[in-house]
Length: 635
Image (cartoon, rainbow, N blue to C red; front, side, top):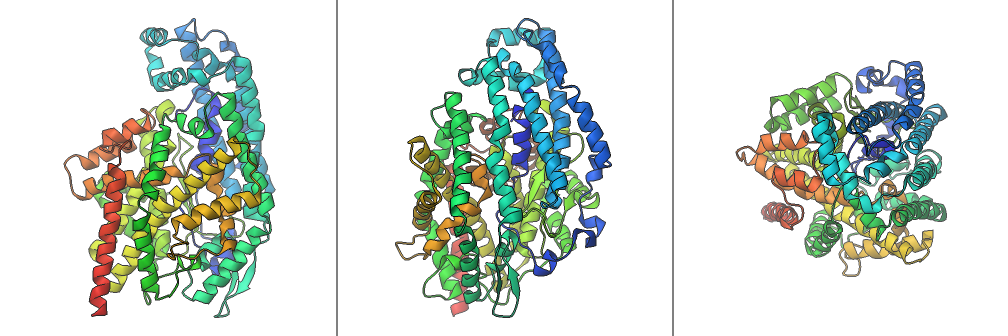
């Protein structure tokens, strides 16, 4: 994903960076009641590195907005003058660069407390500014699209400074058939005022205003089932408590499924609008073409996963056996399977464990990770109103990345921490090694760095822990990761595809229709009809809980990235010559080439089945070890 060429992609790129949410986030009841003011400064991110105050932010914003009209002086000149093209590209890049920093500050301040309308207003103000500039700069893409390759090459010989924009310019030429006239591009830019509506409404409603239930568990604990509370309490050991959690939580969503359905359908229609306006054959083609990903990669993933559901079902049969239940239910899938093993780590312990696990990547990599801890790049603990989940934001090119966490001392929180640090290191290396126009990496490769770190963590844990019960817990945690990242995300990807296909055929997408569609896919993946895992009909409203459906064909990349990182981690852990250097080079490449080509250089071909097959082999090897331990324990 290129930076520059107007801010058409800048605001959406930053929003996607904020969406790098690992599947698991837990929040203790105690932590939920701790106000942000009670959390020590060393556990809160230092946004002053971006701007020392709101006043400084506002001044920078006003200065940026005052420059917007200057872009129009290049209008009509880009195809006749190499110097004017270069000047325009440099101006556009500088605007985009500062916009990213401003938006990062506003959005992260808002995420500290989603109930605070002040910072929500700042974020909305930046979205409005992005639309305003895009409208003024809409001519850039339209004019460049009229150039031919020979003319571009000649310009670059005349003005060598254009070479850092080569990837961006040639990408526009590649998509020439889908580029409209200047007037039409201006209209599309203005449509950005409405494009973010469905996602924004969903975020505010689901994070701040949805009336989440509160129940009493069997031990007297009062469980407030917000999103964070649900992810915590769905894993309690007592089965009747888990069922009560599922019943209460999904009943809350079911009451509003018509509203959620309307929101999601609005987002689908937005995607259809852009796809049809730009003359793409489908919303899928439109979304994937941005990073030059063949639609076959998406479709092959669904085919590969659905063709290997027997491995997924084998995992669930193991979970059923280890839980000792007659029928595995959907409310059991997050339950701990090894009694007496409850791995807990304070944040400071997690920091040391993560740093130790990352040593195979070299001293420089670990030095920067240590700096992230020491210099407050990370917002650690949950507090009332704080955005749920976790993400890494690398949108401030000139500063450093930031991480949002909701840490609650669970092992999965440690895994989430190293996951987000993977994103952060990807952004750090790309921003340091690449000029701004090629620093922003594609979402297709974004999850490679994060899941790679997870692989190093689980390797370190299994290398040092020999106790059978603890190993079983860790091995199942690894399988849970494959379940959540490969199978579950592909299940989401199939739902997203089928949802768009229905809409593109003119079929309605009501809350009931979405629930039926999602339920059919969910039950097929979990083997409901074969008796593998029972899915209660109430739980098929789960689609309304998933924010990633507003990120437009994003989730499949969790799965593809996981398979790529599995292959790369095997090379590094196997101490293959040049593997570490190759991986660091990959992290440093940003968007200097298309993602498929970057991964090929790193040693992974995503157009073939090998990465997926290696992941399935690793999964089945893990299950073999689990079965061997269980057999030994049975004796």
